Image 1 (spheres, helix red, strand yellow):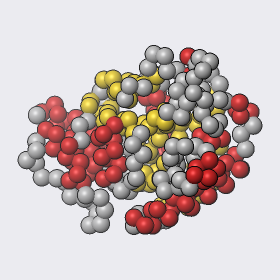
Image 2 (cartoon, helix red, strand yellow; image 1 turned 30 degrees about the vertical axis):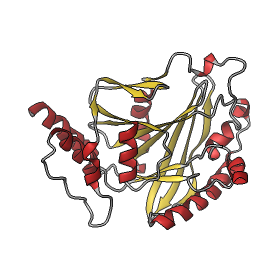
Image 3 (cartoon, helix red, strand yellow; image 1 turned 135 degrees about the horizontal axis):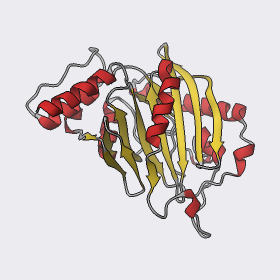
Image 4 (cartoon, one colour; image 1 turned 90 degrees about the horizontal axis):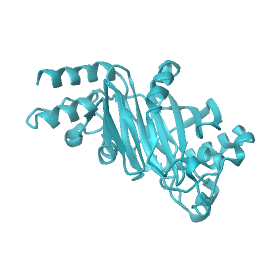
Length: 292
């Protein structure tokens, strides 16, 4: 069973992140912007990040594509992993893309898990209380690893948005409210079911602006498409079937199965990501590109 993760979002400070990467793609001699805090990630590692400006088509590996609107930027899989590691987040190796707007303080991370075709038999019987308890258990185990690395731990408070499944789009959504180091945390997840696996999309935003951000995030996500032959509707008899269903996707991808195998090291992880000032930051990036 593959390792799975609960991706949780913490508002810290993203402004140095993209600014440094974009500036150094264009001018390798330029000095990096200082970290907003004397203790934190080392932004120098991001000098190789390549941001693609919209309008464009973001390649999510060979599995899918996403339209990058005008005024947005996109980073592919290797660059997404570099961003996550620099922000002190364990990576799964499944990261395929990073999308962010120029004038809003949020971004989205795309990951793909080739677990097979996830049956949606449970769509009418999702037990949100039981799922939340499973998330708490998995988060506790994930905190052990975070403590070992000296990273912030996480406390699950409850549902921000209980799980809901759209039978037409085969999209599964939910949001968990949590707390880390006294800061509110909201984890908004979307799972796009495909023929051979699931595209995991995590929205990173300030909890206070989640509800006004959601329509914009969903508008961007409307530009997502699986590659030909990979959509949920294109399932064929004999295709690989996932070992778990909708509940497993929410609770961490089959926690019980992973427990039997003793695989908990990266079962749950936290994305420490900052959104403060990202709107102004991207405006500066685009302004510099126009005058360069």
